[in-house]
Length: 199
Image 1 (tube, helix red, strand yellow):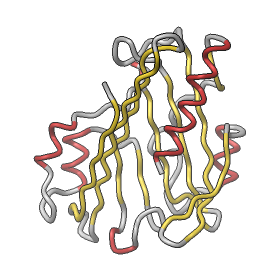
Image 2 (image 1 turned 90 degrees about the vertical axis):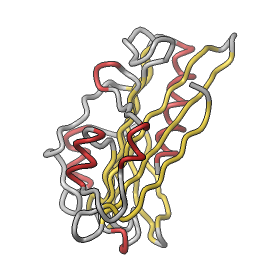
Image 3 (image 1 turned 180 degrees about the horizontal axis):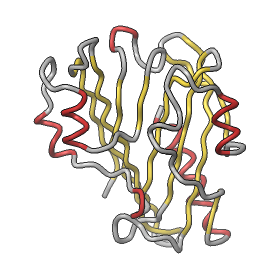
Image 4 (image 1 turned 180 degrees about the vertical axis):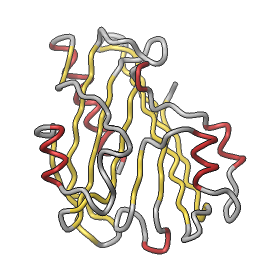
């Protein structure tokens, strides 16, 4: 899922070499703008415009349509010193309805960075969705089946990715992703965290 965002961010970074910006800037919609299981593909495109990329992904045996918006600008203010600021937003559709959304940003104004040191305080079968959000902040991703297994119900995610360096010094990439699934009582049923690269 989030690999699509990472790949498109890399394209934007390299596009910066030809100028100061890449892609069309956008503002992340509020949580109330689009609803999982209700919002249609056309409603998203009508509001956000034509996406940078469209494609299909296979999730839990089902083909899901994806659209992604990407923006990077070398003169923007990054969330961390030395980071190339960029943001990406992806939406996923099944049977024409929204089943997943992901946002990642290394701009200071809307950074998707999260405190991974707090993951250890989240407990399966005990921590609720409300408590997880209170602990980590607004999720940068939300999913429903088939983006997650039906046994997982709904899931939220926290995604952060950075690129440092340049064409002459070499690029250094870093990514961390936390996916939290919930049962029918809105209690944590699964926690999946991974990180890679160099900060």
